[in-house]
Length: 120
Image 1 (cartoon, helix red, strand yellow):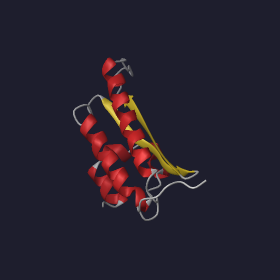
Image 2 (cartoon, one colour):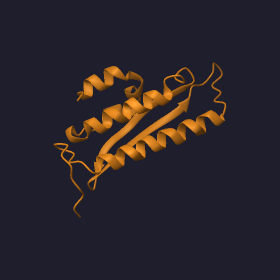
Image 3 (cartoon, rainbow, N blue to C red):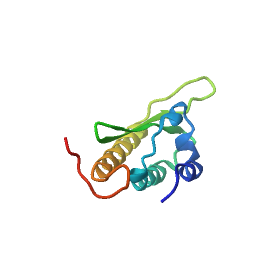
Image 4 (cartoon, rainbow, N blue to C red):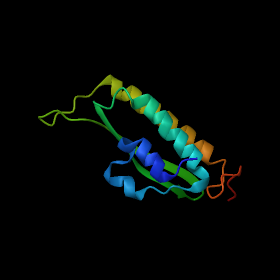
């Protein structure tokens, strides 16, 4: 399992935005977060010259994992951001990765990573 520092070094573009300091890395959820970052990298690695991606928030709220990100088109020298169908496809893939990771984290203790369930 990677540490938060190792994860940030492996995927620096995912942790370079202004919200990166709000990320809460729960130890038990680190394998899920690590897998999620890897999957995002697999989706975006060929598109990073056109898109900026960064995690905005990792947090626990009422026992649930919440992972938030932003994807932006990089602007040209005039500040233009052309809309593309490609971005819609990427957003759909990223949304699916995030939802899957949140569901996986929901079945683990955020402290130790043991299988668990939410008790209300």
